[in-house]
Length: 65
Image (cartoon, rainbow, N blue to C red; front, top):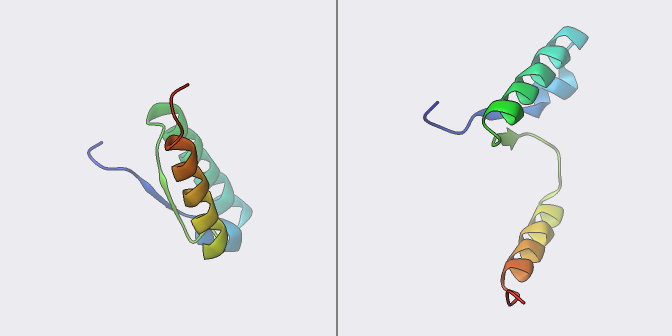
């Protein structure tokens, strides 16, 4: 695999039980074998995403001690 896989969660939330199962299996496989994925159409509001990035930045800016 030469790129990070992209998973569209709109297909999960709007899909049939069969589609949901297929997407869940795909995410499981990606997480077990690669460990990274890009999630699109997840529905998380931008302010929450921005706060998470700010918090991560603040954490990694801390001294090693």
